[in-house]
Image (tube, rainbow, N blue to C red):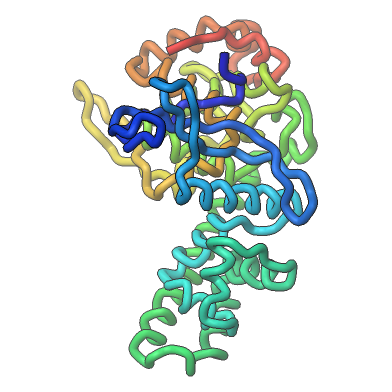
Amino acid sequence: MRAPNDLLIERSPYECPFCDATHPIEIRKRLVQSLVKNEPVEYEQIYYYCPVENDEFIPSRIMDHNLLKARDAYRREKGLLNSDDIKEIRKSYDLTQKEFSNLLGWGDITVQRYETKLIQDATYDNLMRMVAENPSLALKSLDRHKNYFLPERYLEIRTLIKSKIRDKGNYLLRVQEIKNYYIDFEEESDFNGYKLLDLDGINRVLGYFAKFVNPYKVKMMKLLWYTDALHSKLFKTSMTGLVYQHLPLGAVPLGYNELLSLPSVKVEEEYVNDYIGYRIYPLEEINLSSFTLEELNILNSVANFFRDKNTDEVIKYMHEEVAYQETEPKQIIPYSLAQKVRGFES
């Protein structure tokens, strides 16, 4: 029997080193412990399993991937950006690795090393964070190091950064609107599942369901509640820190309309049986490795169970939950009731 933290990712044809033949190989993931800089870290290791020989192996390129994940786990422990975080910052400015290094005034291959193998120190980490959070700082850094760029490319990057400065202002306004709904929930409590509002986490969860379920708006709100309720039931905290209210169509998070302005999703009107529906589509690629194994298991369970149910069926299912039946209209639904969420399997 496999360990409970072992997860099948996919089955794929591969030239098996045990069988000297190409046949379906299981690509799996599990939690393991390793030493990085003489400190133990836990990370998700990918390995290949041959069901014919009942044995496992790790190809060299996967071994490099696993080493990077171990280093990323160390970075998380130390509060540093991981390799994917750095890559996302760079790509948000549409820069190559060399261009990002040059914008920051570093050596040509510094960013490439941070994305593939080296662990940055706190000073370099802070500078990348500041550039990510403040496009105006990126613009100043670009202007300071403009001699590293061809004139045409410098102007292209400068135009993009100026656009991000404008977009950032609009995004910050939307984020503030969401935070205003949670002004009375700035401490961990039974109403937020003993977790403070995590907008980055909410953004990832929305993107996951937009990609793998593609629901309408009402259904999306129920997927969020079931995700948080199940996480609370299993781990005593919600996944996102969202606060839910008892409304006619089921549990709905505070600020639900504003949540759909987060960058991972877009909302499009669709006519369904003479009614207007609001379908949720993914707007940016979601990095599954940003979720823990436990989070992915919950998201998979919720997605698989509700994927083929229409909105009315999901609402009916929600109305039968203890958490809904034991609260009054417009009342905040405490997570102590969400602990009684029904189990479900796909």
